Image (tube, rainbow, N blue to C red; front, top):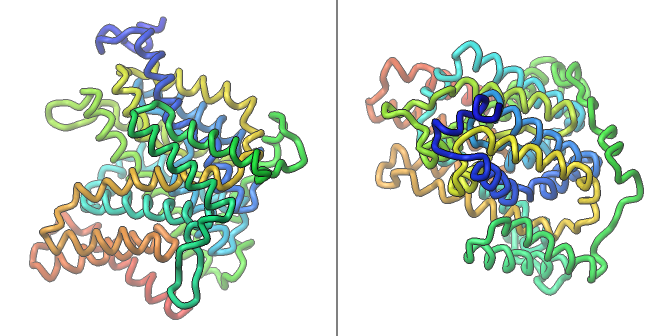
Length: 446
């Protein structure tokens, strides 16, 4: 049955190799079980419930990917989008987390519709490839900045905006310890370096009395605090959002939130798919990826499922490349990853006992890895370099992925026009740029 389902022989692999690859991928991305609840917890969501939801969403999504698309690609709530959910949508716009989950649900539905209708290819083709890399790098800087801030390594300063914090404070010292451990283990190519670093820092934090266990249910029933709490009607109107005016403002806000969830998810998928499938030798000679729509369908369904149980957008994980390096070639690798996440579900609610300073280094490390995407940009070409830079720098400095996208796409379209290289096939790019200009004007008058 396994051979028939995953076609192991055709890919030159075996059950043993696929299982080993699944364990490898799981160890490299298991940190999300701890980090995601820490970030979403700052949106007011119950940490224990989000931890359980993270395991359930990752388990369901990874198994779905393996069975539907037969690719060694694992899924879990995405880094960057969870920060956007918390710091921009909930804390920045004043949208209740239940309503924000409704927006995640709507973005998943939209992504599924676009995939089934074939419109996804049109959108992907309209976006300049350098901006894919710039967005990835900008999101990396975004989450790294959040990690430095939460650790107390970077603090607010009225004179210089930001400044170096007191590194002798327990939280900052603990975060630096975690950073050293993670960095050292990664240098030695240790699998699960980020997870091990979090656990080492957590143990040190417990000995320092920094851990605070929140009284309440630590069992699987904790999941009930977020499961099916999403508010889709409120998301459609954003009637519960503070600080928003009439219907036009609500419509603009909803469109922006759903657009960013959808857009960044699309970027994450394209980048991950290209990297992982190339490494696995699964790309066709003409550059196409077989069963691409199945991959994107699995991802969109996983996002819908994640919003139902109580977590932010679910995406394909670049850490899947570690499993491919270990020999994973089929969906059996993803199924193994999913089963391991489901097994972790029974222990997930206890992550609230881990100090926030112990997870901050993971944000910094993951952010540093994402910034490597800047190497793919042609910095010698001003028409590419300027929009890419504006995208990457604006995301962390405005705490908004939407602003980074708006600056990048608008600048790229404008410079293309000034350069005299606009073509009819670029019509969607210019439509997006015009919409972003209208958004800037609207925000200025609001």
